[in-house]
Image (tube, rainbow, N blue to C red; front, top):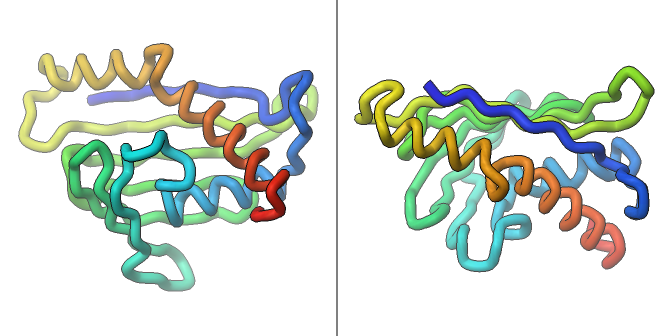
Length: 157
């Protein structure tokens, strides 16, 4: 199994501060359309195909792989992406919370396996290393906050 986590401050010194509501809007926008937040060309399709009061379903093509995710939103707090189809199975979570000093933080964590691959085999180990590396999910969190600030500055949030 792959378990990875990363946490970054939402409002590091020198950055335009985001309120919890603004950071949340960014997370929700990312859940509904990853193309706005991922590097150009990485996500070629991202469509919400079902919606209900408790969740929505999106189908996307990311890095050439088709996937279907069931996404739940805990308002102003947590977005959970359940991997229904695609190369991974499990859940990915983005969570807003205040630390001990009351500073807003954004945390990523996941618990995943790779469909059709040996548990803890070379493919899962490589994926684990990628998630935990410099270009992994910590970088994705920082990129999400940067894009949220851009959308806010453009009046699109």
